[in-house]
Image 1 (cartoon, rainbow, N blue to C red):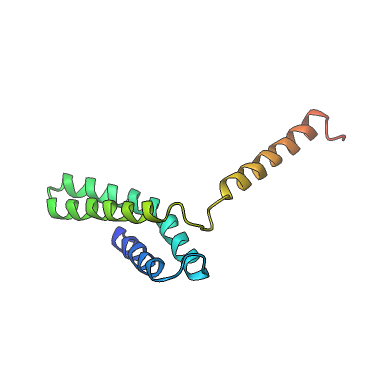
Image 2 (cartoon, helix red, strand yellow):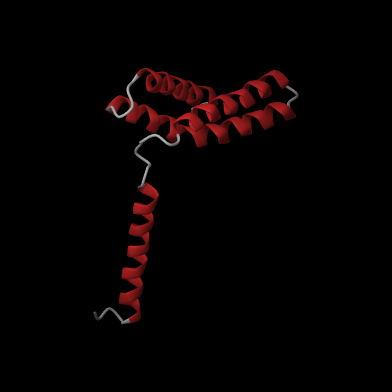
Length: 113
């Protein structure tokens, strides 16, 4: 998967999110796609921009940086909307903390509760 295909995914999801009403399933899914694909795009485009700069291909480097900026604008527009990731960090953190607390208590007591 190239940075351009990830960028086109974000642009397409942004188009759908712009055309749908907030609170609908299509809007929810489109915003989730934008927020999920943003960080891989930043990493891929940054790597491509650096590689193109080292190769002295300034136009391709400029295109990579432009993809990052345009995706950042979309990410900022939808980062506060309702999406699949909202609240997942706390839930995952509690689950991981519970796994470690459960294993620590059984290991300290020798497996006897």
